Length: 111
Length: 113
Image 1: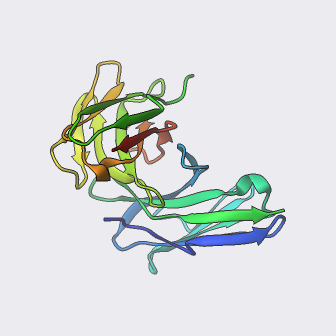
Image 2: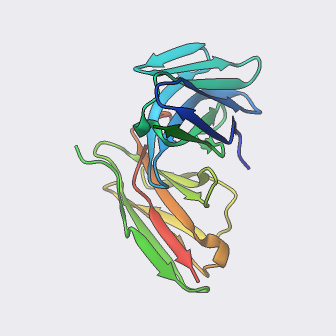
């Protein structure tokens, strides 16, 4: 079973706009990560946020975490064509070392 | 520093056959995890190996088995292949089993006919 659920399932925006994706999860976590996947190939790690952190930035990426609501969001600012990809959230629980992925958000940046 | 590599890139097998997929972990990493990703889905955790020992397993039947070697490279073996085993198989390595960030290989696309 999958822990995280991304929302929306698919998103199309104009180049230059901001893209926001959300992730909800069910059980307590140690940390939450976001990954990007291009064209069904390997995943690329974007950012990791720990359960005691509320916000983290990396370049054009901003991730927030609300443990009371069991949710996270990924914001990509000033989107580019190269941002077209699937984005997955992945959670690590406090009891084991497994990383559980959601089903992903397919982001399409329109020229 | 070399990244995670996987072989082969693509593979076609028939139902009932057996398959072995290979993964070389990133230099300095002692932990390898394997995932199955069906089309349009997120990766599903199969199992993890840490210092040659299995360190956690997902909801996959025993016909999915693995090995990790002293150089921390790894194999995934699947026996008695079924049509539903068709998927992208991803290997990821990490510095240690308790460090969150994983570095993924490009995957092996398995098609079972």
